[in-house]
Image 1: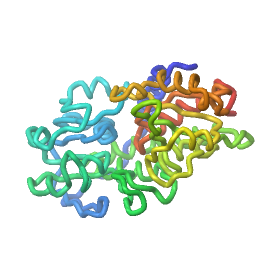
Image 2 (image 1 turned 45 degrees about the vertical axis):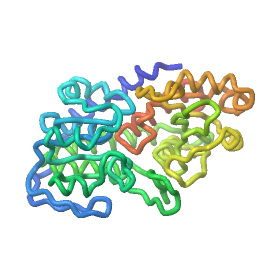
Image 3 (image 1 turned 120 degrees about the vertical axis):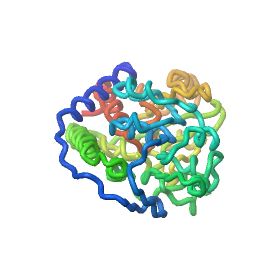
Length: 341
C-alpha cells in the first residue's frame, strides 16, 4: 500500500505549487463588511487583528491565506497540520488539540474567532455559544459547510438534505479572505482547489465500475458502533467525485452504525481514517485494518476479502480543505490496486 504520509506530502506540494502559480486579481474589501453567516448577520468595521482558529479547518484556511501574523491561537486538531503549513503553524500558539475552554480563548484577547464546527459554538457546545462571544465583543464566523439542521437528527452535527460540494468551501474561503482584506489570496486558493477538483474528476474513467464506499472515521471499541460518513457528507462527495457512491444511506452527517448494518451495506471499498488525536485505539488506521481482517463476520465483507482497504486523512471526512486531499489519496491507492481506472 502506498504510504499515507507520503501521499499527503505529495498532495500538499502540488497545492503549494498551484497556489504560487495562480495570479491575484480580487479587489480590496470595503468596510463595514456585513455577511450572513449560518442564520446570523455579522458586521466587520475593519480587518481582525487577533484571530483564533477554533477547529482545524478554520485554522488551516487562515494559514493558507497567509494570516499567521493575525492568528493568536488555534485549537481542536484531529490531525496534524498540512505539511506545507507546518513552518508557519509552528509560529502560532496552540491552545489545545482538543476542545479549549472559553476562558483560555479570551485570555488571548481575540477580536475574531473562525469556527469549524457547530459543536464548538452551537447551542449545546461545551466550549461556548456564539452569543457568549457577542457579549464580550468578539466576532465569530462558522463554516457554512457545517450549518446543518438538527430537526430530523437529534445530534449536534445534524443532517444534510443534499450532497455537500466544494462550493460551500469556496464560499468560506472567499468570505474569510474578504473579512481580512486579502481577497486576492482567497481567489488564488480557490482557483487552485477548483483546478485540482476538475483534474481529479476528469481522471476517473466513465467506463469504470460504480464502486460503493464506506468511510469509517473511528469507534470507541471494536464492539461499539462505528462513526461513518453519512450519505450526503464530504465522504459522499469523495465517492461521487471518484465515480462511485456512498454505501451508507443515512441522512445524518455522522451516523453511528453497527457492524451488522455495515455488512449489509456490502461495500466494495472501505476507507479508514488516520487520526493523530489518539483518543481511541481505533483512531489508528492499522488498528482498524487489523479488526477488519480478523473479525469473523466483518472479514467476509467484499471490500475486506478483496483487500480494497485504503487509508485517508480523517480530517478529509469533514467538509474541509482536506476533502480534496483525501479524494486524491483514495484515488491514488485505488488506482494502484487496479480498482479505479
